[in-house]
Amino acid sequence: MLEEVKKSLEASPIVKKGDYNYFVNPISDGVPAMDPTMLRELSLAVYKYADLDIDKIVAVEAMGIHLATALSLATDIPFVVIRKRQYGLPGETEVYQKTGYGSSNLYVNDLHAGEKILLIDDVVSTGGTLVALIKTLKDMGLDLKSVVAIIDKGTGKEIVKKETGIDVLSLVKLDVIDGKVVIQETIED
Image 1: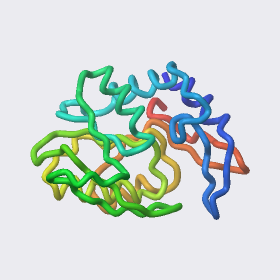
Image 2 (image 1 turned 60 degrees about the vertical axis):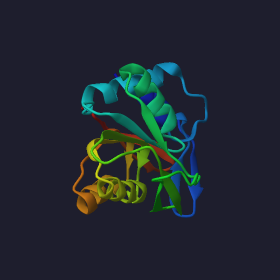
Image 3 (image 1 turned 120 degrees about the vertical axis):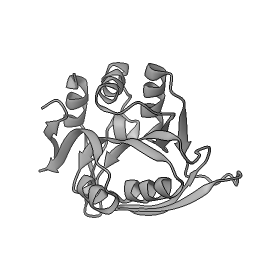
Image 4 (image 1 turned 45 degrees about the vertical axis):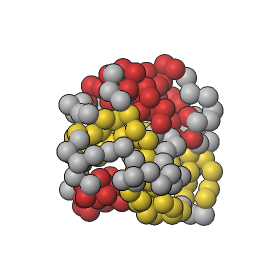
């Protein structure tokens, strides 16, 4: 089912950001163009493997937005975006996140204690974003039914589990070896 996804990932150019091997792909960067077939594969796989007994899909800006949109259209479940911009709305919650290549604040709006959610993001690599978000969302009284990172790169998935007790569902595990993306496994293996 993930054939287009695998082909696209394996063709990704690699950019060095310090010591970090950053792969450039439509899933994680929006360039090159996202083929609708690939986006459909991703949303169908999440639909198949994630717990969708939820009230809302929650996406992390920016690269979780297209994933949440596709999943929302496939399921008729509304979605909310955790933003990088502060609005100052009542109940807005600020989250400090630190990753392997930077740090910033994220802002949570329109989520309420007791709601069942699926949290979706493009990549888990260091785990910094997901750890910070999961801890905050739990503190807000939300029921995280599924946490999804389409791509698993590095040790972030294990760090998230260790620091939050939450398993991250990923569709593709990959690494960058000798300047190329190497798919190590998919959820279907």
